Image (cartoon, rainbow, N blue to C red; front, side, top):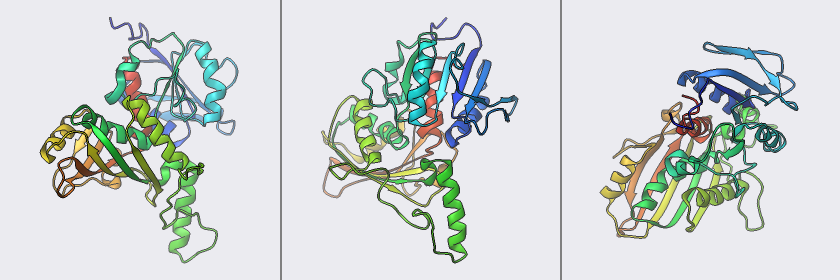
Length: 337
């Protein structure tokens, strides 16, 4: 028997279960038919005690408190970074393996930052019953590194420049509600006190640092280097666009070795987790919503160069960018199956 496989049904918890990503985690757990012995959904005081149901799964929301994680095998955390820093150490002390979807531990050198298709080998020593934290990367980082990894292993990468087109759902449920309500008001002719994102494109996600980079841009640059295991010039401009769900990324890259467009496409087509769209069959956020893969299209060579290429990446930020990547981490160690 695989030593990572639980000898009994898995005891699972989800922290932040009522948020956009938490709801997707619950839905996926139900769809994947995990062998569950217990499922505890933790939510805010506002929701605690209320009933929940997902297919054949049902129960009441719980409020996190001292001792509430005892007895669990695995905890999927997608609440705020502050709540992760507060509760995950307690869960780890109780022997729980925690997969954290917040930014709290992503740059902690003692915590693996994992995209299974890219650096899943970092999970090899992880065992249930031995408390630990595994960090789930930023949503826009995940879809980028899934595409860059096969190119890095092939012709190598000398430089990458990325512009993101990130949907409103990446900012959370409240931002999505405000955007939808504001858009309805704007289309009715109102123009006062509308969210900045309504019918607009905003080239700043998070606070600016001293060099003029935003928090989101720093996440992508720092996290990508950790996951790929190497550093090369990576420049990012992160932009919020008026799209409900799904992130797009326009990528310009230069390879270390000369390579043909056909070789680039072949590498991408063979890469795990990548769905290649050839020719004029380009992916869009609406078109891939609900899909678990990372979609790539508009792959083309820069005129006159055999080292410079451009491409377009799209992924569902709530799935591969968050909930699905977390479940993949668990399934890579056979914890859920």
